[in-house]
Length: 415
Image (cartoon, rainbow, N blue to C red; front, side, top):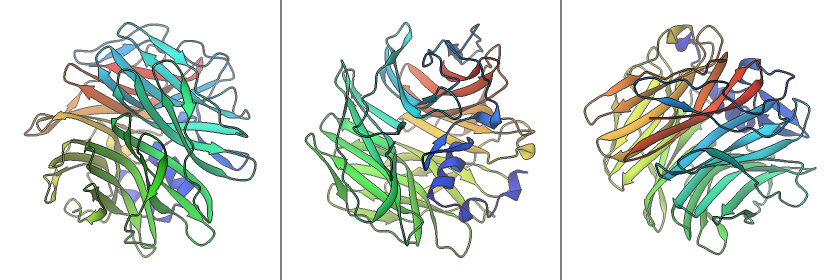
């Protein structure tokens, strides 16, 4: 039930919180947590192309997307568009449940999606992309995690219009595991990435890294609790960023967590909870200016979808509709992605599991209220989720994955 998960997140460590954040089954490979397998539905058959037939609705249309050849498991977790004719989506794939994990990247040229070849870091056992940001048509940065024999660490790669290349990221002293979940770039020489790391004495510590065009470096951030996580970041200018996630003092429910960067330092922002909610978590944020940000996620209680608006001074909860049959969801009901093109235009993608099977939904903000949008299903759909979204003034693109007879395959739709 939607209201029966009050303490679920608060007890998670960094790896299992990641699994909760994506609502996918966690698969441990060489000590590395791969997040794949929607509702446990994975076929033994290879998947070559996601959709056997296209589907459409009044607002959203499903696009054909490629999958890694011979891979039974494919998923897109993030997308970034610079125009209706230029998008890059990233995620992961695996040949089977027992196979090593690889990073997945795909490019939309206005007509079709095509696979790209991510770079592979030296000594990598597995690599996974979680977030991507493209400040121009020929420049993208993707972030995630790389697993080596003894530990996992942060991963960043850059695309220059022709190929992907690994960018070295800082080694965190004492870290036993680390990952970057989101990145936001205002130019090819200005990117901010967020995530968290764990140590022998701490379950999770939020972290921020900054790219200056030459190298990545760690930024000092305040941590107001024992355990802190960042899952989303958005930079409206080179000197203005907002990062969101959740925190846990270890004594109660997870609480909403947000920080802002002014070009010199990060500061903690006070975030309210919806009335009657004991806790919650942010999954994503989108800023159109330093004084206009929207963050989305999940709230514990009777109305789980969550959206809040930052006006440069304070956060304000926005009432959000919930999807059909949300009270029967076996997992969290959450808005996982959000993208705003102006103060009065935001679209969020969400997913939940009514009756135990993963499903997705979308809703839009028009400056006055949030409203659910109709989202189509592929012809061979069994279960699925939308995990990321990117909007430009002319179009929104949402990505994720779904399970069908062919296996778990990539999913993209546009509006």
